[in-house]
Amino acid sequence: MSVFDLIAFDADDTLWYYERLFAETQAKIAKLLTPFENPEKIDRHLSQVEIRNIQFYGYGVKSFALSMIEAAIELGNGRLSTKQVQSIIDHAKDMMTRDIQLMDYVPETISELVKIYPLAIITKGDLFEQEKKITRSGLKSHFRQVEIVGQKTPETYAHILKKLNIAPERFLMVGNSLRSDILPVLELGSHAVYIPSDTTWVHEEADVPSSEQVGFYQLGHIGELPALLEGIEAG
Amino acid sequence: MSVFDLIAFDADDTLWYYERLFAETQAKIAKLLTPFENPEKIDRHLSQVEIRNIQFYGYGVKSFALSMIEAAIELGNGRLSTKQVQSIIDHAKDMMTRDIQLMDYVPETISELVKIYPLAIITKGDLFEQEKKITRSGLKSHFRQVEIVGQKTPETYAHILKKLNIAPERFLMVGNSLRSDILPVLELGSHAVYIPSDTTWVHEEADVPSSEQVGFYQLGHIGELPALLEGIEAG
Image (cartoon, rainbow over all chains, first blue to last red; front, top):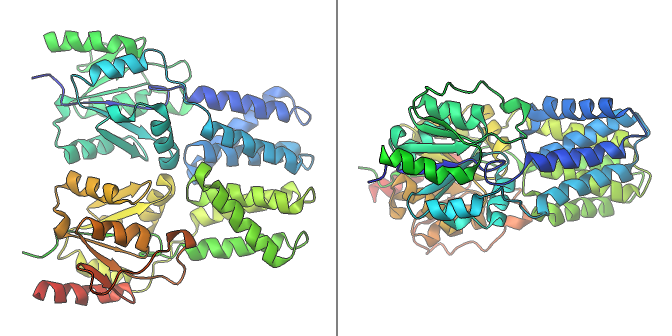
């Protein structure tokens, strides 16, 4: 019998690139606004409006688009055209429909692990957008369970594990966010593999647990996961 | 032992008014646009853009806001101001934050039924928006389970029932949409109570099942539900 009854993966920036897409789109929108302000001020304002609107909108591309429009109107101060507003909307639609870029080693790692473990996706964000991305990723059939949640607290994970009848100590979570994927899971007594991405949103930052912490592992990329699991299984 | 192991309720326009909020907001936005077109054309175009964008955005207030902006830009044809765009955004934020209006008989019916049955909410729509509304409704503590799903097909319900270990014939769903709340549930062999609302979106329309259909019930309002259930329990 293997050590884990379920291995769950975060999705954005764990299975596929995502923050990169926002950064690229935000850069395109910033360029559109150069007639109105200097580049630093534009960047700062776009990010500020995004953060102040999370309370109204939550996460995802639609939230981002509405905040970008609002920030652009403020930066334009009467000079932004509605043609430019439409171009922000078009950028958002492009983000929704373009190809998913899987991160390195993802397809082969998932194909290998699915032979041994039940796999799941536990992701937060916009339900509609996450479902579309999971479908478009081509990986969906490998995951027995897909949970799209509003936030990832210890209670969120406890609820999912209870529902699936899985003991916390037999659950492993893999993700790029300490705050959402790692710390709440360790708090439950489950195991967590932290794979930092180069673009983790400032909202998700937290202190890395000590390497002494029971159940905590850190990897450079997901391709190293099968070897780590073999090691754990071998005791 | 009672006849049902779980009674689930749809949320929007079953527990609280929702479509009405969209209709009211759309009317305000239409008024903003009267300089550009005649009222019928404005209404038609706002609805058309909303429908053509569902494939990109899904449902909810953010999707609605982005579609209203796009439609307004098209109707304005160069004459819409960004101040007017901001006012559409402000309307959307108002929709997100204003008080939930529970439908008649909802609080007393839920308080009564929770003494006898495990209750759940099964709703589709934007995850962030639905969670906020459920919290703001003041009813959350009555529901043992809240499922926010992307769509409501027979598979969706089968999946939820399997997860909760409930036999389909011991499940009752209550809702205002034949297409989402009633027909898929009857297909599984579960029971369904249809409570039409005066504002059911055209996308949700379908033929009403025959009154001969096993497990199908129709009520005028949710306040009639306890008496219906007593009748069923009495056999």
